Image (cartoon, rainbow, N blue to C red; front, top):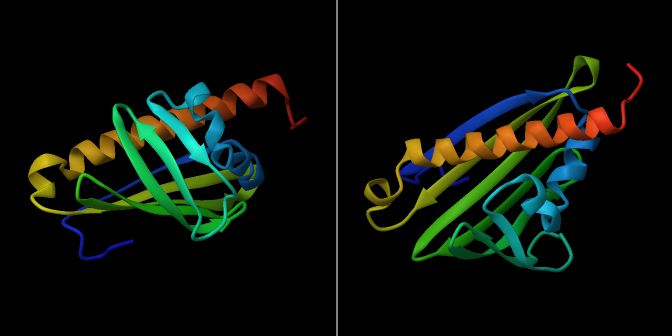
Amino acid sequence: MDAEAPVTSESGVVVDATPAEVWEVLADLGNWPAWAPGYEVLELGEMTPGAAFRWRLGPVRITSRFAVVAPGRELTWSGVVLGYRAVDQQVLQALPGGRTRVTMRESLAGPLVSLVFGAGRLRAGHERYLNALETELARRSAAHPRGR
């Protein structure tokens, strides 16, 4: 994360799924359109630190590089689009009872970024993404109960 970035956001949600179950959804970037409206992977190779992937968020095409790929713990990437540098981080924290806290952080830097894309807009996008993730995990859990 860029601590000096003029725009930062952090949002989180606690889901009724284990970190492994959350990771299964997060790491399947090719399946984004099925549960995260507006997100689409255009090109994806191996998910390893330093590997590039191309994706689209709404009409905006983005090229990013994985920074951290730690199954069940963290997925972080960075990218530059239209002169703005973004770092996106998703951290998973195991909680009692097979639950997981999912924290999404982003820093955004570039010319006049706070005027063009403020923290409130960034946070709203993260909350939509996290709500969609929570809905997808609940759908999967209903389809395949864990026997609690």
